[in-house]
Image (cartoon, rainbow, N blue to C red):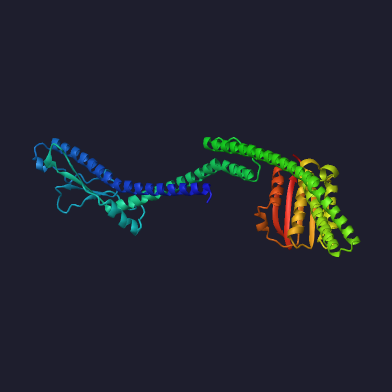
Length: 455
């Protein structure tokens, strides 16, 4: 799952939790606001009756104080205005048949659902009545008792939640949207970093990243740049070392070719001369057995000399240095064709301008073609082999060498092979900055090497 989606999902979860907490708090506050309204109503009514009590006491000073209670005159419209909606107030001691004086509760909020009306009182408890004395200095003046209406309290809480939840939902949606956009914008540079790492995986190590505003992303970008530089340096050092090893190996091959030619070649020529002399002398002496043995020695010597010539061709400097790449490839194919008529058909396909290709690139191309043709001819049962050399001009000037055969073979097994020949051409191609691939072809294998020429 993408990091942006994970962060947005977590943000939405936090918003939902905060919205739930706000709803619970709003329910608790709205439900308990009835208690505050009840206490305020009792206090206001008590203060009003206290003023009424002392006024009656001053106007009717000749009457007994117990007869000065403001019983009939306190139930007025002014008193009703002092009582909050959903609260009922009564005066004690109450007169017979006297009903509590209640605030307006009709249309007080919307009717709550049954589950809400059942859950809220269960968890938040019931409301307690509030008692206030009419006069703290005269206990005989009576008391004011305010009682809240439970149903009105639940309706008020539901109405408050409906009013608050709309605003809360809008704020939550706005916060989630703006925060998601901010998160997506903050993590947008991560795509550039991933793209740079993918280019590094393809071999483009020196990848320049833009400057990031975030300190953490800037540190990551710096680390990626330093890693690319180190990989580039390590690759260059490895390529230089590989080229040096190839040069040393070529020098050893040339030295070995000279040793084989000077020592084995001369000795084989001497053996062949001795065998011919023995055969001639045996023929004159009518020694049939000795003459036959001499001919067998001659044949074996010819075979060894042919094998030695093949080895010398492979060990000596490749022909591109003397003939050029195109002529050396034609010579290579012709030499294989001329060895035996029973060998498979070899098709040579040259495309593009190959005249100016020289140096290590030409040597590498020739060695790749030579090794691939040798493997196809010696280790396969191919009837047809195709050698295609193409120069791809343009910005990425490169040389493509492809050898295909129909001799069967397992491409995966051959690609994992640690044989000397395949390892050698892989090292040469890598040192030249190219790539080598071994894939299945129609009825056989396809070995393709790409050698850059622009470097």
